[in-house]
Each structure stands twice: as structure tokens, then as C-alpha cells.
Image (cartoon, rainbow, N blue to C red):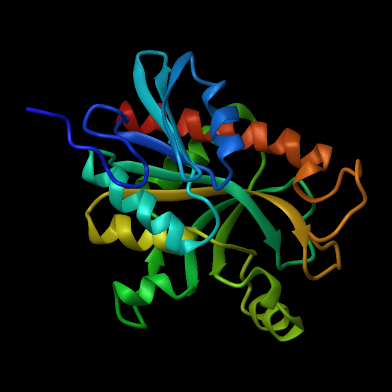
Length: 250
């Protein structure tokens, strides 16, 4: 019998592990794979890049989701079709609280559904909540590694350039830690499928203090290119991989 291939991520049964780390950026998927003990590229199609390897004796994969919930939904649907059970977003985020600094790490407990994609799956009031065991594993992993973090709710938005002063003021008042673009659909779909979803994020801007992710001069190290962000991305990768070990050894 021929192996059936998913139409967007171009992977089939046996190509991905039970635990998958999901960055938005294909280049970050490649970076994540270098933290595995060994790995191979499984697929590279339409911006969805997948690597599978091991951390110790535990199989682990990473697959890029692209930007936004519509693209991330495709990845979640197709990964879970071929056996993925633990899906952890490994990404960046814009702070909505003044005490969050560039390079800080956020472990999301839930996400406000300010996206359009999840509305196609669930009614308006349905909560997008991270899996308890994934959150617990991320916390335990961070503490094992001596990496500090913020714990709380984020908001997932579809419109990067529509985040105006009213948006910032409203979610700041509601004590939402930060804004990103994929967590809500990962949490929603994994809950609907009785699987486990989570997210760990690095702060690359602060919409309250005016440190915004926008245009910059060639060669300027700002936003995701800031050295503090790059160093923290490596930290969040280590935390996510350690969390996978914890989940696998429960």
C-alpha cells in the first residue's frame, strides 16, 4: 500500500513524531532541528518545512506554520492526520504590558480568539486554552533550565498592521500579556481533537512602550533580529525540547 501524503505539508504516516514544535518561520524550523541530537529534512513545500529527528531516544519533529491562523490551521490539521499528538508553538510575540522586556519569554495559558479562522470551527464564546499538561511541562522545563518566564493569556490577531491604540489599550487593561498570530487556532484545534497544544513565545516588541516591530535600516538589529531576541529564541527552543522529554516520560 502506498503512503498517502498530506497536500500542503507533503508528509505522510511515519514522517513526523508524536511531538512537533511549530514555529512560524521556515528558517526557525531549521534552527530548531539543529538542537535535536540528529535530524533529517522530511519535506519543504509552499513554506511548510518539516524536520524529524530525536532528542535522546525520543522522536521529535518541527514544522513551520507560516504567518497567521489560516496557515497554522492547515499545519495542525495535516500533522494530526499523520499522528502528531503534542503540538507546541515556538514563536515570537509583541508585549501588551509595560513590564515585559525585549527578549522576555511568555508561556501562554490561553489565547483570546481575535482571529477569523477559529470561528469556522467553534462558536464565539468557545475558549482557546492551552493544554494543562503542556503548560505544566513548559514551566517545569524552564525551571529545570533556569530560564525565567511570564505566565498568562495572549491574544491571537489576524491583522498585524491593524493593531491600533484602541487595540493596545483594550488588551492592556484586560491584562493580556502579548499579541501573536497562531496560538488560538493551535489551542482550539488540539482541544477539539483531544490532543495537547501549547505555546512558548519570545517578546520582540512592546506595543505599550512604543518599541514596535516595523521598518528598519539595512543591517540594523531590531525586532526578531535583536540579539536579545535571538538569544531568547535559543532558550525557548531548549525549553520546548525539554518539555517534550517531560511529556514523553510522564
